[in-house]
Each structure stands twice: as C-alpha cells, then as structure tokens.
Length: 326
Image (cartoon, rainbow, N blue to C red; front, side, top):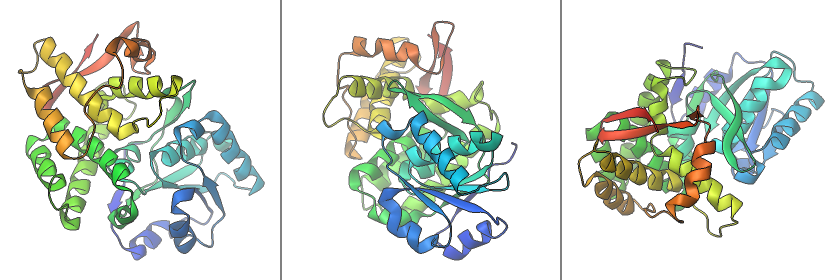
C-alpha cells in the first residue's frame, strides 16, 4: 500500500525484467492495441476489451472475472491491464474483487492513462452514466509507461492526455505548466514529451503517497473534474452526438473551476481566460456544451459529494489549489 512503482522506458527488456518474477499472467487489453499485445504478450492468456464509457460497467467486470475462472486463474495470478484509462480502471477493479483480490499491473497506452488514470490505484466503473461510482482503491504492482506507444495514438486522444498533464502541473508547478504549453503548441519533440510524462507521473505519485485512500490531500487531483464528470453525464444521458472525451471535458472543467474561483474571490481575474487561451492553442475545447444549470444534478451526484456538499477544488494561482466544500 505504501509503494507506487513507475517505470518509464521504451525498452522491451525493461518490461520483461518487471514480469520475470510472475509465473501466472493474464492479459486484459484494449482491442485497439491488439497488434502490440500479440507481439509482446503472445504466450499469455489474453482477453480483449472494447474500451468505451458504455462498456465501463459491472457487466464488463463480471465478464472478466468469469473469464479468469475459466482460465483457472488462482490467487497467485497477475492481471496485466494494457490500454487506456477505461481498460486499466475496469481490469484493475476486476482484479481487486476476483477471489477477494489478486495482483494487477498497468501498461497504459494513451497519454491520459500514462500521466493520470493508470497511476494511483483508483479503479472503477460507471453506474447509470455517473462516472466511477463503483470501484476500489488498490495499488498496482507496477505501472510500465512506454512513450513509444503514443506514436500511433490519434491526435484527439493525444490531446485528451495533454489536458490531464496540464491539470497536474497547474496543481503543483507553474514552470512545468508553462513548459508543457510551449511544447504542445510547438513541435512536440519526442524527448520533450517523454520528459513531461515522467514529470507528471512523478508529481501524481507524490500526491497519492500522501493520501492513498483519497480522504484529504489527494483530492486536489480532482481539479476540474466536478464539471468534467457532469459534462460527461449530461452528454451520455442526453445522447449528445460528437461528445467530448474525458480529457476534453477536464479541460472545460478546469476553466469553469477557475471562473468559479474568480467569482468567489480566490483567484485573480483573468486566470480562466488564460487557461482558455492556452488550452485552445493545445488543441482542446474550452466551451461548456450546455447550460451550467443542466450540470447541477450530476455535480450533486458526484462521488466526491458528502453531506449534500461537494468537495470542490478551487484555485488561487497556478501551483496552488485547495479543497472547499460547496
């Protein structure tokens, strides 16, 4: 519980070294990375998963558990989740309840998962379109981050990960935030992107270590997420076409959280506009897709709500955010 093991490498030898001690490995993977999985994990039992918000449900978790039983997976098994955040969340949840908990590890294949979703041990699935209402907090054996896997990622999916990376830097480090905006509005050189991934992963791990069970300090990582989850709920419940993905919703959510902070007098005027300008330059959306009052119901149902109030993450300035019950 007190360790977070992250390895950033493009070397297959490094991955083999991590897997060497595990004798019983079962791979749950996003169908979009099937070629990589077959090439890298050919000898292990494998189950493909259609990674979508619609499939991020208890039915999918139970299907994984049923498959593990059919494969005679025992308590010594290692579940290897290969894919984006939806895959690592769902497979990790299945691992945490199968036979009262077996080991699992993450190999995130999207930028969003590499800097956020696959780090920290949060697993979960949706319920009635509400994000991650069911889940556990259980640390993976390790998270292996291979930046090379991002080379085939569609631009929109890559940009989605930029939003979560910027969020991490907004919470902790203004200089890294400014550097990231420069990199992602420029040539996006591989070495610069890898360096930023490592920095973001380390920052998230350092925050998680202070609050493994998400009771206090870790909640700053939810900056922008109250609005983001509400946007995702609204889109799903209203059948919105061309819906924003999670990272895009987070980008919009951070802008709205900054506006709320300005309205309440915590942040200086202009911070939300700065975010909007920077995010747009990085290829992210900036406008709420519906009326703000339409998001009220979802925000009240947010898993961070307690006693009728939401533990809302507000911002004073880049590098300083705080939690306030609203």
